[in-house]
Image (cartoon, rainbow, N blue to C red; front, side):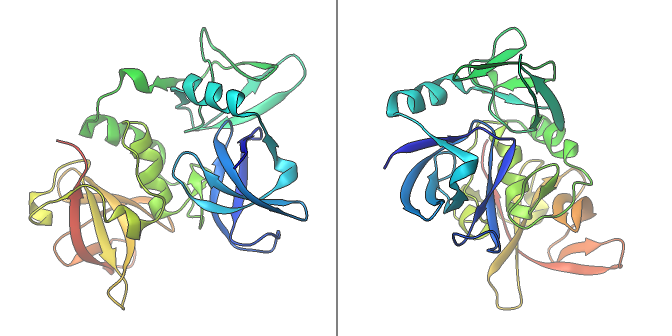
Length: 259
């Protein structure tokens, strides 16, 4: 399984190898992957970050040697914290979105292969981070009002599980990509009344299957992606949508990911 890297700002991961297929997730700049198979200009990949599998346009990624792949991984401890910021090199400028790794970042510069970029935005070095409700809140609020986008992982468009995954990346906690898989992580909280800021609460659809997730906020509130990233009241019944003045999601349980 040869490795590869995304050298563009954001690219879609699709369910099948064509541009009309559903976008199921995304790769961000400098994220890496393993190639599982190739088919007529498309490659089926497994993301290094979260093991998500899907198809990407071969023109939007670079295949690399294993040594280069490992170097990128070891050098990617610093992440962009601005919603979107232009990075500039001698030959081009490129937008970088929040959550993108910045390989070999030092003195407001990072590099990918021979391209060296200047980046003046805020960053977070995960080598210096401990999980906390305060940091989760700070990061989550940056996504507020981001539009809902199925398969999205950035403030330009995000789904419910992509939102919580992106936020928890900044506190050194690796979450699975989909809400039903995230529900298997962490340890259970007795009830939503015992939750604390940073806990994840999960919700079911009419068939009783996990279909939604959000981050618990102060005073029995939840921040989640539904239409957009928003804050709503939540209780043992579910999420109360203040716009339509009714419950929009049925509560299932709450999980804690850190002490």
